[in-house]
Image (cartoon, rainbow, N blue to C red; front, side, top):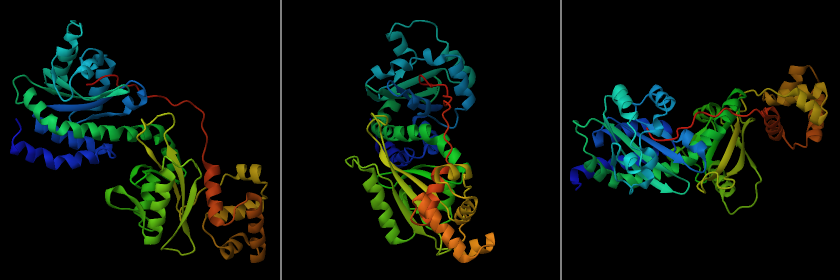
Length: 397
């Protein structure tokens, strides 16, 4: 039975567990806490995915005691095929299986290779595991390691997990789309960092779940964009904030058939002639890739004070711009006014105005903001090379 003391320990931590759903870097700290509550050595959470194996590769969380080297050796030795975790989905939810119980129950009586290794690297001579969720697409498991002469008592731990377990189940369910988003867009965001383009992914409620460094840098300037409570993407100006929130909500609605992107101009408080360009595009699952759980918006933002290199070759190829027009276009991206461009290029102001009008006509852009948007679209490199997959984590630890 769980007493008031246990409730007092568990309840304050439950909200903190939910924070880890969209911030995977918090898992170590949260699992360190849970390890202390259960009085074991370490804890590992892993998703065994039957339909979308790429989620298994990234849905792996451990407390701070587990090192990457331990995980790599565990997989290299194939111990994930000998630790019994393949059968944890047969358990009742939140009930521990201790030692080789599940492995033996399923007819595997071979000597354990897992436990000698576990004791060598962790000092633990026993493991217990339980199922946190189980459905046709896969299952989530928790495993913990301990010594048989230590303070960890499986039935006491199971009693605690019957309280906190359903919350862990929900957190992991919420966490899966984030892991998949990171898997699919991580390399893409890294590339755009080098191109000085900020990219973030937000939920229908404007909650930022993933962003590259450039996006975070732009937000950190505090000029136009900001993060509010709960990592909610917003704008400094109240009117802009409402407009941004409504646009995200509209574009992320699953019942909207339209896939049209929307551009928003956020004026700079530093320079009233400059603006941050936000391009919002619907980001929805395809054929159940996110398990029907995610619908959000891909946000692209360009800082007007951060120069973006123009792809001169593509501009000439697609829009037949002259060399002079490309120079003017390039100056626009640098945030120069018509007068500044004239001084910079040594041309008359009317000449610059005429050349800019020609650029608008050839590209179909209506203003400078659309020219920036066009430049962003043309500098993104397309790479057809196959991505090298990381080795999958096929079983629990």
